Image 1 (cartoon, rainbow, N blue to C red):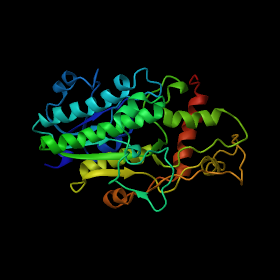
Image 2 (tube, helix red, strand yellow; image 1 turned 120 degrees about the vertical axis):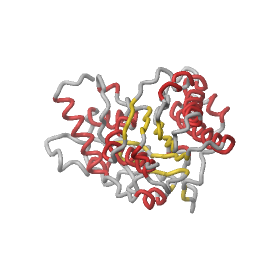
Image 3 (spheres, one colour; image 1 turned 30 degrees about the vertical axis):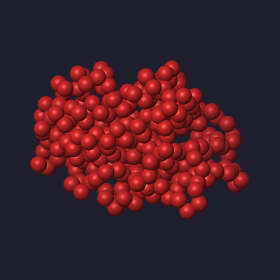
Length: 316
């Protein structure tokens, strides 16, 4: 059965990445079903929506950088939500492939420093431990841990249950670029693009420090999910990251000519970017034929959207 002949269920379409997936899916003539699920960690919320589904793209996952209870608010819901999707898929004979959204942080903890000679690939795993994540006060660390544990649980499920469907994991880096989902105010933007907006309105002359260097345009990440669905040879994990490393100096310099009337931080020849672990997205490039969206276009398209929304009066 060709994937484009079946119904594709997409979770998380009200979010930044999930909202981008139906567009490339529909271009490939997929029939896409969008469902609002009250509680994805509850199996009963899922059973009724899998009838006739041939493939699943599971993007939804809890996100909070200030959880009151790490285990209750992030770790267990992320893991149980993913497992419930897999269990429902295993009980539905029509499902042939499931794509899950993981993260680059499940491969290499993004806060770690470089190891001489080490290049991270899909064969690597973030070594985070459950108890450390439960007790951590770093919300970003806990979120990355939740995604790591969810993906590990998915592969354990495949090993022990051996369902009829195939599983593919997409592991994107920091997502930037324009958004399609609805937001009521700028403060409702997620962390990825919220930081970019903050550095637009901060109106300071100095460049902000670069914390994260590995990024990918959200449209490329969405496309990777759909290509993984459509490509029979797609298997296991795919690190989805642009080879052109991000830094704020490069980002702002790339859009100055596009918005000559706007104020940006001054260029700084002495701007320093800390070294980060090396990663290699060759598997995704070869499998999906990727030519990554350049930083200047990704950043420029996102800022053009910010400016348009400001002019339309979107509140802070």
